[in-house]
Image 1 (cartoon, helix red, strand yellow):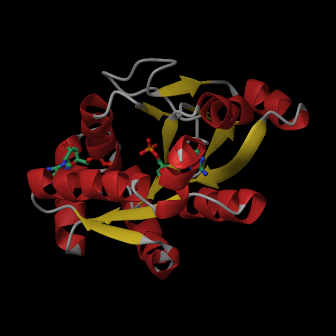
Image 2 (cartoon, protein in one colour):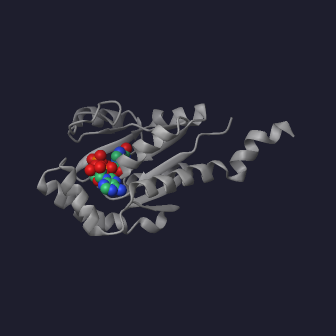
Length: 199
Ligand code: ADP
Ligand code: 5GP
């Protein structure tokens, strides 16, 4: 059994990370989504423990002090963190894991663990991003303005990523993302580890 691969997906708010990730885990039964903790409010349709674990500021603080996070960051004014046990699950079970992290979280995981496949999702223009955030109707106007402002800063980190998925056509973006997963699974070191004892 090889160690699970960590696929880290970042991109500005509204770029399509959640949509693509959901489609991807439906396609690959052996790819799991790492559930983060957050202090932001639950949106209609989101399920606690599936999309996020929605926690209070106090619970989040307690988790920080208990060293329960592999990384955590303040994003668009709220706290988000990856519980260590989510990563350990992938490591010990050989299951590949997909993490939806902002650029700070991605940098922390890279610096701390020195592994992972880093994927940046973005539509081809800022105008499309803006239109999608407005159409999504999940954030107040001031939140949308904040998220769009943050997008400019997040774009400055795009060069640190291994792959860029342009999300204009959803089907095309999904095919490209699936291709990344398949290609990474075929990397020689990962495959040799699986078959070497047979030869
Ligand atoms: P993120 O998780 O990156 O914030 P979402 O997955 O919530 O982004 O997508 C933002 C909005 O754009 C959602 O309403 C989603 O349905 C829509 N969306 C995502 N990808 C596409 C696409 N390729 N074409 C049109 N709409 C899209
Ligand atoms: P949203 O509120 O739109 O679901 O997510 C806002 C941002 O938080 C996105 O950029 C998403 O990638 C990021 N995010 C979600 N979970 C985590 C996490 O555990 N850690 C970090 N650093 N960012 C996260």
